[in-house]
Length: 71
Image (cartoon, rainbow, N blue to C red; front, side, top):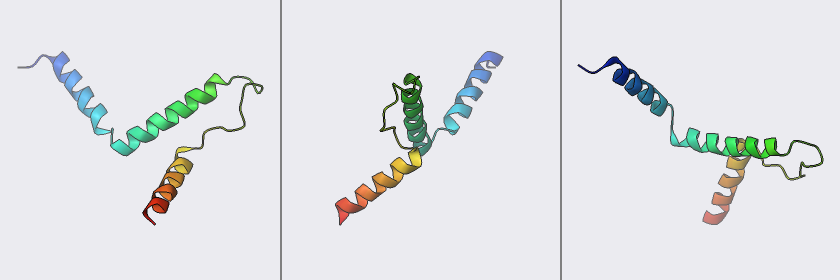
């Protein structure tokens, strides 16, 4: 019989992996890097005018670019 600790670690791992789809992972990585970039610019003087777009805007632009290439 497996020790209780191993069962808990296995259950935690399965739970964590079940929520990780490719789309969600790419969204989370993008949003995480965008928020990190914003957090590094702590004062208004450090903020640049070209902030990164949200993930939805990024996906729309990416899809628009893919449609242009196929035409």
